[in-house]
Length: 416
Image (cartoon, rainbow, N blue to C red; front, side):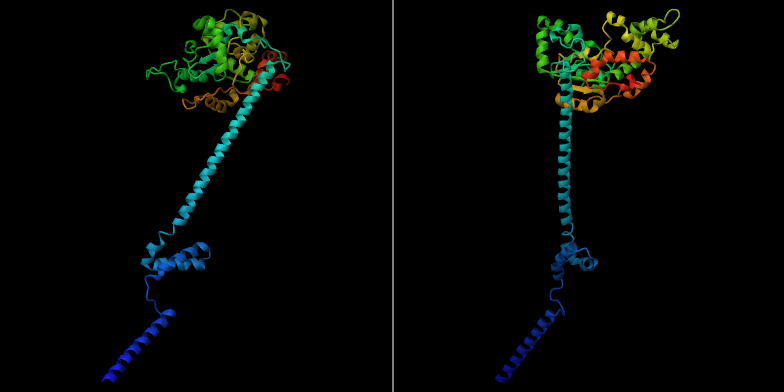
C-alpha cells in the first residue's frame, strides 16, 4: 500500500510538471496570453510614439486600430495624445507673441528715433537761419525778445499747469490745438456737466477762438505789471514750447478760400470791400453786406487778394491780418527757441509725438476732425491767372517762412 501510494503521488506530480511545461512553452511562442487586458495598455505608448515618429501609413494604421478595438485602451491613450501638440502649440504661440512684441517695440523705437532726428533737423535749420548763416534776411531777425512789442506776443498761449507754451498759427490746425489748450488749462466749463471740458472734440469750435479763454504773453503786463518780462523769460526757459507750420502759399490759398470764398461779414467790411474799391471796376456803390455782395456776384478775386498783399499801402495801414501774416512775425522763432516744430502735412504723427513729449497723452487725444482740404497740388491752378512778376514778389514776401521751416521753393509757380 505504501508503494502504490508513492507511485500515485509521483504520477500526479509528474503530470503537473508536464502541464506547466506545456503552458510555458505555448506562452513563449504566443499561443495564448495570460494577461489579455494588460498588454494593450503597455503597447499603446509605443503605438503613439511610433505614430509621431513616422509619417508612413503602414505603421500609423495599426496604432489607430489598437486604440479602437478595446474599450480598455481608450482611457490610457486618448488623454496622452493631445498633450504634445497643446504644449508645443502654446510654446510656439508664446514665442510668436514675444517676437511680435519685440518687433513692435523695435518699430516704435525706430519711429521715435526718426521723429527725434526730424525735429533736430527742423530746429537746426531755424538756428542757422536766425544766426545769419543763410543769406535770406528778414525784419526782426536780430532783435532781442525784450524788444518785441507786447501786441506782437498775442499768439503765445501759456498753460502754467502743464508748463506749455503754444504759438498758434491760423489755418494750421489752430482750432484743434486751441481746443487741446482749453482742456489742459480747464478754462471752459461744459454746460452739460457743469465741469471743465475733458475731451477736446467736445469744445465748440465757434467758442474756442474767444481770446478771453487763453492766457497769452500779450496779457502779462495787465496781470503782472513790471514783472511781466521777467516772468516771460522764466517761462520761455523752463516751459515746453511748440508751434505748427504749413507751406506758406498753400496757407494763403486756404485763408482766401475761408475768408473770401463765402460770405463773411467781418472780413468783407474790413478787407474785401477795400480790395474791391481799389482793384475792381465795380460801378456805383458797393453792397453794404457780404451776403448782398455775394448775391450780386461781387466778391474779391484771388488776384485782387494778392495785389492787396503786395500793395505798399496795405503794410503802411496796418500789420497783416493774422490769417495771412507770416509765421516769423507771429511766433518769433529767432527769439523763442521752440522745442517742437510740427507740420500740418504730418499732423497726425506729429501730434501723437508731441502729446507724448508734453506728457499729456494719458489725459487726452488730439481731435480727429475734418482736415483742411487745400493741398499743394492746387498751387499751379490758383496762381495761373497771377502775373509772373507778382508771383515772384509774393515769394519774396514769404521767403523767410519757406526757408525757416524747410519748405521747398515752389518752382512750378515761379518758373512755369
